[in-house]
Length: 97
Image 1 (cartoon, rainbow, N blue to C red):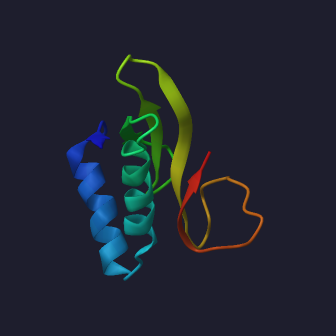
Image 2 (cartoon, rainbow, N blue to C red):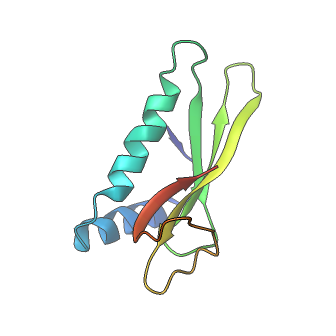
Image 3 (tube, rainbow, N blue to C red):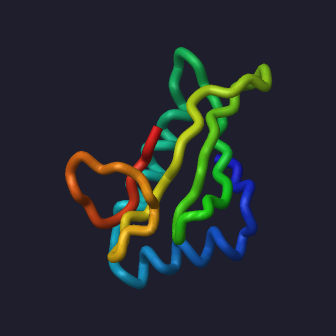
């Protein structure tokens, strides 16, 4: 996984998740890392700053330079400032594709 955003922002988000004892960020990061190890089509996930608080955007980048899924690793807080649709209300981080 390549962290494309400011390292300070990344660490701030991780620290915030730890401070509220929410493991959903770590769970989502592990899921994205698992995508990188797809034996049929390995890739690298590029994680970048999203405008929503405590959130990231991401891109799958393949060895030939092409892109796969472009999505978000969004934080749904209280209030939820992600402006993303959730079919089942959830507080914490979710992957949106």
